[in-house]
Length: 450
Image 1: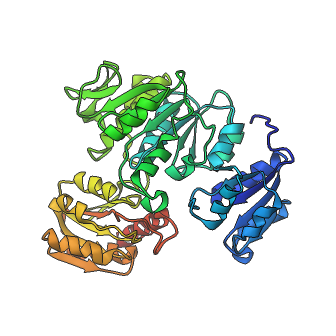
Image 2: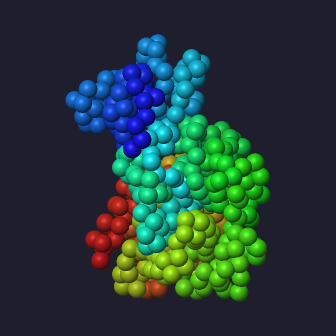
């Protein structure tokens, strides 16, 4: 860890806990800052806050009092999930208090370079693929962010010979004034988190932060099939590395005659990739670009892609029970992710979907219902999903209370050869703390069914 002194005796407010807030508070405390933690959850229900209190950190829980900002804080480290229209954050901006996220803090203390991955869909799969390729290729990678350990914890342990592979959300990237990854990947941009950002333009701006501090010594891997992404790339100072599954590219990563090419060099046959879903080919191409740029051999890349079957909660194959194939795609928290999941299967499918209502409708799903023979809904969006299922001509539509009951209900509606797919198209927060919890319950129920 770099021995930085920029936080010594500095008064810092950590706003919001969860894992990243705890990590930030402990690191700042270690760096000699005067740390105050403010979390909305009451102290009696907040074991993380109590642990910090025991370690000498000032803790204020149960509310976000605006008067707290009158205590002369020089910096705020904000939990990414707290929106900028939050009254506390608004007041801080009026007072011109700098606001960063924990990723920025991790970058400032890290001895290792970063490979940052962002985008609407494919972040987790791409991050995992890059990490696995670098690991098999003996590049000493560490994994951080939404998919792994908290970035500030990873950064403290990282050495110069390591590379930190980090999945980054738009929320995290909004608080990164100096963060500069050696390699950045932007998988794609679609409508998402508009309740947080307000507009798609603001959402795209947040994603663009991944390359804003890059220089000509860095690399920016981009989806060349998206005009919006290429507009961001045009403003980047990094070396642009495009990828495309549809067009042949002289420079970058593409597919030609059934082979994946990097700068014209044959890497491996597409047919040898075992990861399901046509949409995952984009993730594969961007991961190959990052691996090749770090010196990973074609043999190591082949070994990963010939064995890697997917990440947990992302089109994760669970089991086969009496000929029925169960897949957990709980990380499909938006419509596009569920569309891509449905496109991955040609077999008759029973879809389990529903969750938090963010105000959108689901008509975009209708063209993807071609192989859906039944839909089982749950959560706040159940009525909306049932409406589009009826319009699509799906004859079997059932509503249940939760994911567990959906899995149980699906089995008698299926026959051997069917796919039973949890792909909610919605966030989980109406019923579950995280999409991981939702997926774990589904997996556990499938195992009980067996």
